[in-house]
Length: 214
Image (tube, rainbow, N blue to C red):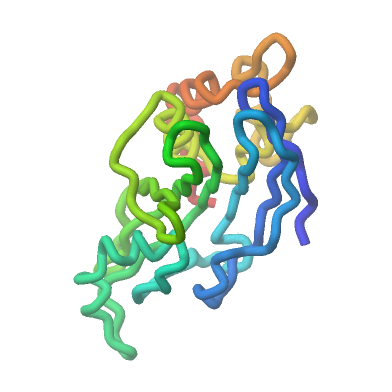
């Protein structure tokens, strides 16, 4: 089991627990996270789909159950997924990471899922889908805000491991380039600012690109 680490966004500190991706897609709910409640982000959970995949992406080839946020993604590509047969997969969704977070005044609980389309053995560029919990049903969220765009940019241009390295105080042997960028993503109190982090990741996309497919 991975250790729980603290990650800080803006001036709000919250704890996230990387939950382990399951080979059985019906278990995408993950393990219960230990969360420190905060004024703005009462809940935040980072989920790495690739943790248990052993050098392979977590690949979805069929529609998932409606209670899962990933269902919205598979519903979006239901026609393509329906072409798959037991002995022949022609279309798949490759899942990378997920951020589930409670936002005030914006449809409460959001889930940002980073994924790619796998077709004819070719992988598309990474994409982000934003879904929100409407009652007891997940739906795609088609509006935006400065806060959501910053979070999407962070997800698009990083991995879960990279984010923990930006948060950490020690220098990283795994991501040496991040050591040079940490200070410019934080405010005077040493707290990560999501707008600054999103900007730094975007401006240094080429430098950090080699880590995105690890």
